[in-house]
Length: 317
Ligand code: NAP
Image (cartoon, rainbow, N blue to C red; front, side, top):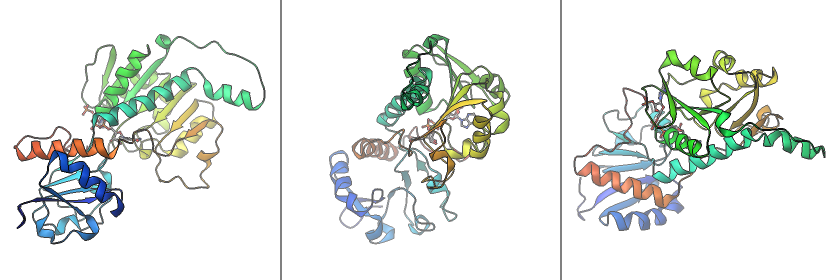
């Protein structure tokens, strides 16, 4: 669809109306004739070719008769799939700029090093003025496993290999990455988890991954293993995790994502002595990097190429 002015139109719901001038500047360079309109002042819905959104109001995308591509303004797409009236025939792009995976690798490297060097115990000792040290194993003797070897998981695996860790990855299909032991499919989840000292969850939210690190899977981990969850909260049911920590089976958990966000003020996770809470900050790529990624995807889409990060409805991610 091209408006009477000759432009293609993208409606944006990301960062609120005050972010629109910045989005306009960012897209201007890459696609000068892409007209950016605010979601709340979108003009004629028939003008709209593209919608870049975060949590679109249910039913609104379906009222855009010439919509060609829906662009999630973030990596995940659950906030779009939650719309019961979503026009299912329109492709959805996940926005995964290289910066997003780099930031995730920083977060996961921090979390794994923090647990590996037992910094949480040292911080507890500091509060009690206790001068006592422990001999940490070498990184090469610490087994770290990543659940989900997608754009995020692979970048994190490479970062952990570079730090010297003994790294394994688990995914739906087997992913071969140098120096990373590859596990795949439901039947290899148990041997994968049984081998780990630190489990890092970077899975997408799908019906299959819901509750995947529940009571049984947590029992498969070695006693004293640690969990890092930067995938989605639903993957590690909080009551199962709290039971595993309180029984001493899981030593520490670093949680960036939660079943309910923001985490409720009364949630016991906030104050648990063996849980570190971060407010969904593992990967927060800049608007500039997301605009570059989205502009490139639109241009590829218009050339008839399939953007690599299209959501696959058959797989659910
Ligand atoms: P992706 O490229 O789609 O990769 C998903 C990975 O999960 C793939 O390796 C896939 O296996 C695997 N997988 C999916 N379903 C599975 C199942 N049932 N069993 C085993 N493995 C399964 O996703 P991504 O870009 O890496 O992002 C992953 C997730 O990170 C996002 O969906 C989001 O939940 C989370 N995230 C969090 C933050 C944060 O700030 N905390 C930021 C961004 C993203 P195959 O390789 O076989 O396809």
